[in-house]
Image (cartoon, rainbow, N blue to C red; front, side, top):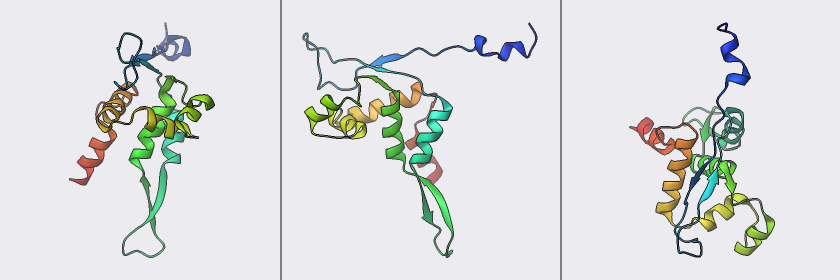
Length: 143
């Protein structure tokens, strides 16, 4: 097989979905936390999410100059939503049952414990190939 042929799509490994119990607040009939299903998102999908969460902020002391800033909490929330297969966060009936109208708001209602939400965010970031969380990178950059 030529070196070029090794890079053909047929040779690319497809990443399988993973399950994770996002919250202890939602349990099955045996009292076990319900497992959610998550998928890998593509670099292209990630870029769209990142762009949607980027704003231009003024540069201090430089009139009419701006720099991009990623709203990290919004970015992570949208990444979790894009990764979630089950439950369907876009389901109108499920949203209505929590009195919300967006998948991001539904996510926050379903996982309303801050510690569980942080654990879920870490799980999804690792699933997407980030060994260090985005928040950790922000903290490191600030130091």
